[in-house]
Length: 143
Image 1 (tube, rainbow, N blue to C red):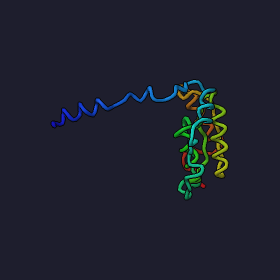
Image 2 (tube, rainbow, N blue to C red):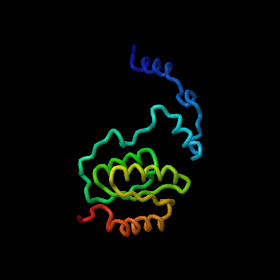
Image 3 (cartoon, helix red, strand yellow):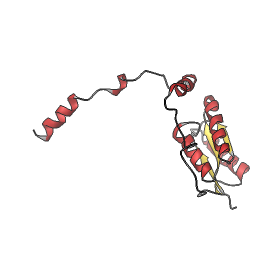
Image 4 (cartoon, rainbow, N blue to C red):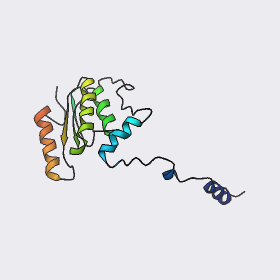
């Protein structure tokens, strides 16, 4: 059998994954909380599985979109490495952002959630200014 024939055979066995899962409407943030409640196993963002070693001690991280998912995992891991965190979230994701703050603080670091839209240049400048106001810098704190 030639490579072309084999790849054609493989395509016959493929199934469209879009129809194999319940449609949970992820865009509606009210539904997102319901989705997280029914996820099994629940998402783990490093709060239990990651042990830091102080590699970011004395550092400050400004992270965009850390209210959930990969951004939350980065925040938690950076905190476990010793960094303080200021992060953005959309106003409608404040409940998720509060959970990220709780996880970072449980790692012994300070976290500040700032709601807003990073598509706005003025908001981005405010983020940098707020980070410097709260922590004295962005990046290395000089401690």
